[in-house]
Length: 444
Image (cartoon, rainbow, N blue to C red; front, side, top):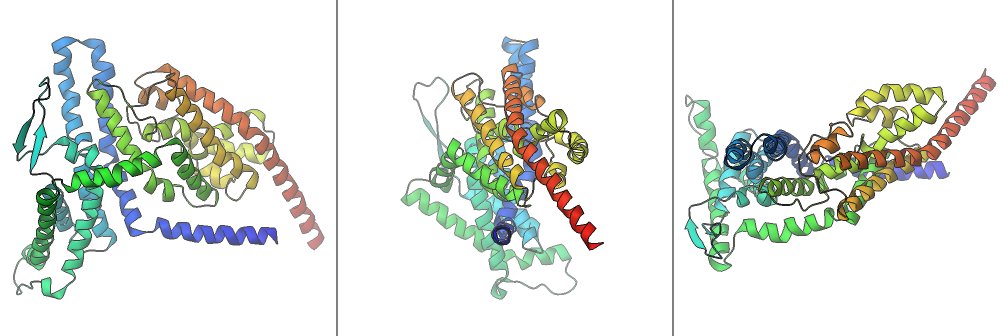
């Protein structure tokens, strides 16, 4: 009865999780970040080259000239993150809605984002002792970069929703006669809805600037981005969300359903701000960022299963587990652990679910407090999540061997933590096999 009740609860939970994962808005958000991931990786390489490699071969004016290479790459990747995410949100939302003209949505979202920016900006010159100038017709990297990322998400999504909704109204459609080139027909069919969408955005922008002396970028940053980031990238908030994602994975549903939507955007903002700070010669501030997860919480794969593999190879004599471990070793080195999760399995395996959920908490706490007390610095060079353990720590920290040592400590501690649960799981598997063999013998 208990088993049936557990299955009923897990099936219901799985059903809810699948609905969340298939939500068009969350799916669009997840896919958009995956699409622009290469530019963030390139930005991380640019920061590493500028701040780790170039200082070894030059200094003074020569160093500044060399660092121009990394600076221009950063401007074209990291510093336009808000703009990039806005157009990708628009395009992918259109595709997910099966809209026939998705590229037109990209144009609308980009125009809407620019419309929503401040018409005048205040600039304090370097060394100006507080001197300030008011400038017209300027776009700041602060508005289209990391600090404008959530504005890009929201404006890109809202403008796309409004635009597509208007195009569906018959009164907004202009039908051209036969013989007109197809692209011309497409353009005129969305002409009125395009203009009305941008007019509405313009009215909202004007109201905010004239009546409230602000702009939507600042409003979204103050009311959405910063509160959400302060909660989700606090240690308790991060551990709660990440653990819920791992619980889903233990029930057979990929953890990105939760983590990809709730954590990735804010952790990328933190990661990008760390890269920008180091690029400007300042100290990285955010402990919990995208690299924090790769290097401490998800070391060797979700659930730190690299530690489980080590426990199997060093301590286990159970041949089925050793065979699965051999299959999972190569992908596990690159943090891909589905062969272990579904082959061992960890899914619906109660003894293994416990360390699978708790090991990342152990790794996160070790990494967090080691950074908080100053043993290591916050990670600041973005690396792909498939970067192997130890190498990921070395690269993301700009060559700090103490981060590598910290990863070794995490692996050793979680390997020992996995061990007793591994032994219990082995006994359960052996006992289950014996009972099944006895049942088959009786049937024969």
